[in-house]
Length: 390
Image (cartoon, rainbow, N blue to C red; front, side, top):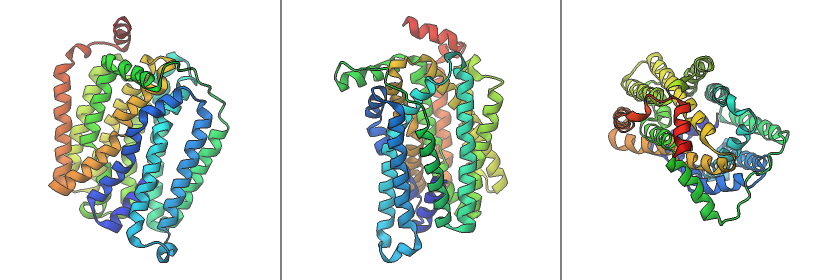
């Protein structure tokens, strides 16, 4: 909800696609810059306490953004300060994300048996995607019909609910007691990922495809300029991709994509890139929704495969640090991709930037195919044995 509201609000203030890209960069800088430290802290700390601090910080940053967007504050805060303050709070959210990912990754691993990781990953991702459907749709509709103030009341309420729910989690103590210095410890996590061929390949493929192929940051501009559907339409556009992801994930809970994970990952990323190109060429709102739906469906396959690979191949004592490396590759690729999208759109134009991004995604997956042919016929068990032997 907050992403939709802030994106539309910033675009209304600035009329700049570059300003939309800066929202992503503001969050990506801290999320990438301190991700490894966040993983180190997660491995050696109690996770419930970490999450309480994280959600408190997110609640406070949202409260500040709510305050500066109130119309009644116009007399107290100069309009020129509103955008920098919002960027600063998004930066704070990025700091929270650097610690959030490693903490929740570890909690997930200790909550279900290892043999249920593939199916559990599907349901976990589906829950997140359901929220991604309801959140943008609700944010756009409430913003359109009741205004930004009412929307922020709802946002703050749900963040507070999340904070209360974290309080009722059981404690998850550290399983990693570092004896070496922090740099040696962080190096272990990085080396583990770079020696694991499939894990590194999945992260790299997702990084480049999302970095160049993502269009989420530009949706407010499409809603305003190309499709002319307003904030209500923007909320639907943000939600329909997640709808495609949820339906696909529900299907994958019955029909797992892990029989040939690398082959299926390459197919999914190819479909992702093609759907982005088609979205850029569309001028019809309903056709655009269809392509966003398809893009979400293909992206969900990539999410399930990569998440399962990480959970199965990561030792318990390294989960925080490996998750941190994943955050540097994947967790912030959306925000960095938002910045790339905004920059490319300001240089090339809105539609050419989207088509360019889809073409780059297809180029990346083509190059990856020729470099990783040996992984295509392997099942996950085969790769697990290979990596263990190495």
